[in-house]
Image (cartoon, rainbow, N blue to C red; front, side, top):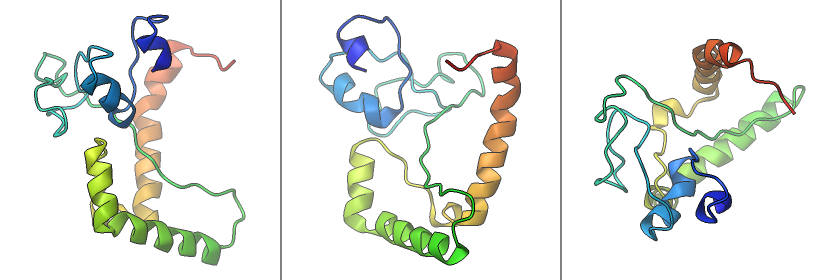
Length: 136
């Protein structure tokens, strides 16, 4: 975002939580929300879907991952603590304020995350392979 604000780059596609402050300060010009509907924190900004990019949706999501081999009891305890924190009203209010959409309780389980990550990998794999991107 710093490079965009400093005009060293012309385009950047950050998550809303990163972009909301510079957009609000008018340091950058937002083009679209990459979703089917508008963001609650930027209701004046049209979605990509509204602008003719039908059925396209891309968003930033966050999750906690641990190294392979961590005992299940440790992973379960971390999950419980994170879920409890996300459920706190002040945390939900703050996340909403910065443009984050908090996952519904039924989408916070470890099993749901496993399925979600597998779906995301399958969803984006062909596009990434087709782009022939190389790590640096």
